[in-house]
Image 1 (cartoon, rainbow, N blue to C red):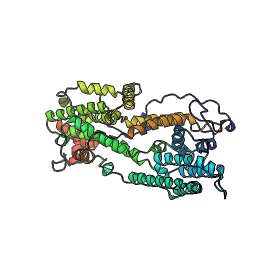
Image 2 (spheres, rainbow, N blue to C red; image 1 turned 180 degrees about the horizontal axis):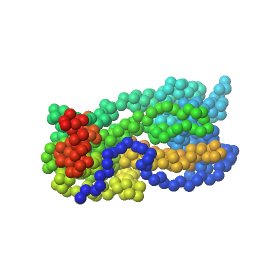
Image 3 (cartoon, helix red, strand yellow; image 1 turned 30 degrees about the vertical axis):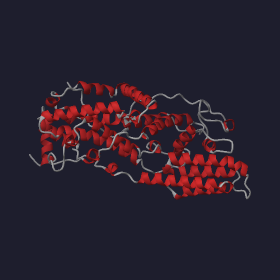
Length: 473
């Protein structure tokens, strides 16, 4: 027998979030004076004032912040201060500390400081390019670099290269591929779509290995557009020490689009299963998707895997008992076991760690692929955010929390940068993005027409659906 149906897939809600891991309370905060120029990583102080953290970001002739600190603070600082204001303060501190506003510069010191400043700006623009969408932020960059340029013309050239790379990155982020604008919304048909509108997936791709590879293509393409800052912006409200207004109003479009893609794939799987008129064909489609899901697991594409399992567990599909009776379900039950939510998805997390380890020691792009179950990643980050305060009672920033946040987001950023090793088949990916899919009511109607209602509740629902969708009494 089939496992119990999981119900219709839903977008994220706080009510069904997984249990958060515990975080120990941070130790007592030393004074700011005691912290000056101490690295805030590797067991050092776990909290500090915002001013101290900003100072820690500013390079000098003899100091450059750790790379991990730069990413952690730039990721989390937007909870307390707008990126453009942070950049303005960093540039102001550089000018003040290096005396770049003086008529005569200390050229020896500036030549030690200059490369470090440019390195910081390069890391910032590379990792968080959307922080530089406003012209005023570019003005800050040009101003501070313009002040050190007289000491070495190479600085001006390096700045030009940095801005060119930034503009290219912003342009690429602005040109969202057509695939990201696909038909995400389920459509309610008056009847099953005619062949002229909807070809079945198996007509486009009958090889489960190929489809798993094309799904991986889609996943990685969509992940490319999610910036690390979106994980913070998804849960931000406002800084309690700031004004009543949020620190920013940007939307998390790419993150939201990725969640919609997951839901679309769930509905696409269910639509493809419910459409064929004969149960033998429906069983064939189910077995095909089981093989696709298994190959997704082998690749490390856990997001597509979970979407396929969710689609097959939707009630309109799971109620097709005559169809499932013709399916060899052993492989499916193994996959369901791997993605079982029991124990906070313990089995999945073990598989994810295995894929992550494989990625670290990989010799080929294929072995590097890790595409996590995205909704669970978001839930983990949500609970990390909700489980610990951003600030301590003394007003200091809880930096220990943001180190853990940066660890999770940083790992994801590494995974999303893997180049897809599979050649793209545009006819398949186009179908995945644009094939019409049934709404929930459409799925139930197709399911009831395939296998008649079994009880009074189903009969009443079928009658209601026929009346509302098909106009029949």
